[in-house]
Image (cartoon, rainbow, N blue to C red; front, side, top):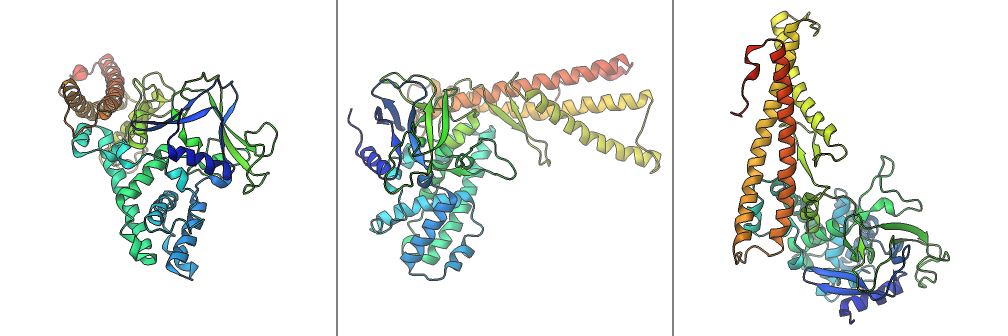
Amino acid sequence: MTEPASFAKLRIWAKENGGFIHPALRFVHTADGSKVVTADNIPPHSPVLSCPFSLAITPETASAALKTWLQRTAKAEDSFIWEQSTQSWTERMFICSYIVTHWLARDSGLLESAPELRHFPYLETLPPLQLLSTSLTFSNAEMELLKGTNLYGATIDRRNELLEQCQQCQSVFKRYVPDLADSFTFERYQTAAIYISSRSFPSILLSPNPSLAPTASSPSHPVLLPLLDSLNHERSTPVTWMVDRMSIAGSPVTQPASSVSPGELAVSIVVGSEIKAGSEVLNNYGPKPNSELVLGYGFALPINPDDTIILQLGGSPKKWEIAREGRPGTAEALDGIFREAFDRLLIAWKVDMKEELGPEWDGNHDDVEFEVDMLYMRKDAALMLLEASRSRLEGVLGAKKRLDALSAEPSPPSSVRAEVLPMLGYYVEGEVAISRDVIEYLKARLDSAKAELHDLGVEDAEGSEEDV
């Protein structure tokens, strides 16, 4: 099996920099990028890929390389200008700018004289923007299919966020290298941002004792780990991300390159089960809903058990993540947003009572009238949330109707890519299923409040909610 030339160069670069690629692995181009297959059986618990810490692209290494390259290229002496110019940059902005700078240096013939821009062979193996299919790359026709879903607004918000970040980065490059700044385009910045969203690992992995759970003392941000990010995702694939010293016997890199310290740490992917010859070697990105997969990765899973939707009361900063029925945390999240809606009504009720009974009222009631008021507020909270949920479901069903109609056409329009239709179909299925679960929960809450009101003899307790 002959590998593409870019991956042959990647192998050489990886070996020179202490990386490890299992000898059975082969890189194969696909319609949407690449995949990794094995030419021979790989036994369980085998390391298949390894990246030394020094080869990771982090905000710190990106900032240092950018500072060196820009100051030398611009012949600038004042390092304070760089620190001051980038003090508002996020971690992603440093990494995105570092990636884009490789392309600027290549186009201007400066790459060979820029040893600090060391990741070009790796970047050359990544898919170009036209092969990326996250919702950030959607055409106007594809965006129309998203209308009525949460993902429509999320995509627009992310695009605007990236545009603002890009403009901040462009201003720094215009100050340092005005002749090259016009080539620092939004298209390139967005491509780099998609590489981060679809390929990054948590920075807390770069530790002698890594954990995938960030803490207040050890916050996490995205980093790129060349080689490790070449594996595609399959949910529940048994893999381990292992950190070990490169010189330890049994480690995948027992004789690291001369440019790498023998005691340096490396991150490896270890397969948990046997991989048969000819099979694709896969990674497990962890549980991710289709909304995240479409926005950040460019694919979706059918009937994804990790799907969620976000519910939020108007004017509230609190966001409630609702998963499919029966998933951990779903009942608690539904109870939480219901309680928030109820508390909002309760606050208004207390204000009214103080106005009616005077400021000396202590907020307590022990009579039936108080109990009735509480039940009415439970009923009103359910009705308020039902109205919003039904409106939301109506929008999602509208998106589903458009997708179904387009999928039924023998030849969908060229403005909608073939891979987008099934991806959005999987996403919308989850949105519809969870939205209906939410409505059933709220109807049960409403019925409970109405039944208790009826038991207390309240005449309009059976009032219908069908008008909502």
